[in-house]
Each structure stands twice: as structure tokens, then as C-alpha cells.
Amino acid sequence: MANPFEQADGVYLVLVNREGQYSIWPAFIQVPAGWKVALNENTREACLEYIESNWKDMRPLSLQYAAPVDAI
Image (tube, rainbow, N blue to C red; front, side, top):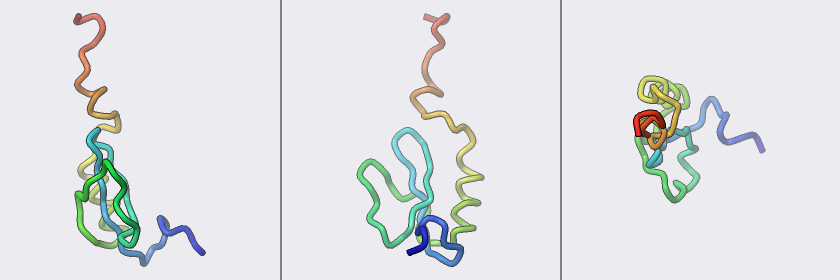
């Protein structure tokens, strides 16, 4: 069986977790706990484009908004 995360003609979702991290996810696999759907079923290309346009900072939200040590 081919990798379901890399099927060019597959149907995918875009998921996001509470840390603001995105993932492409095969639509036929149950969404894992802690993740929610950010983009409903679409093509792999459309999902990757969505992630590219919406995930600007790869750091988890907890790191993005953490106070610098020298500010304490």
C-alpha cells in the first residue's frame, strides 16, 4: 500500500492543533485527539497551499508568546 499522506489524487483535510501547528491529513483517517479541521476535504495541492498561506510561524504558539527571559 502506498503512503496515504502522499497520494497526489487523494482527498485530504488540513488539521490544526492548539499550538497552531498544521498538518495535512487523509480524509478517510479519523482526526486524532487534540486536532481540529481547519480546511474540509480538498485536494492535496489545495491543502498544501492552505497551510503555506496560513502557517507563517512554525514555532508552537506557546513559544511565540512566551516572554523573553531578559524581560522577566
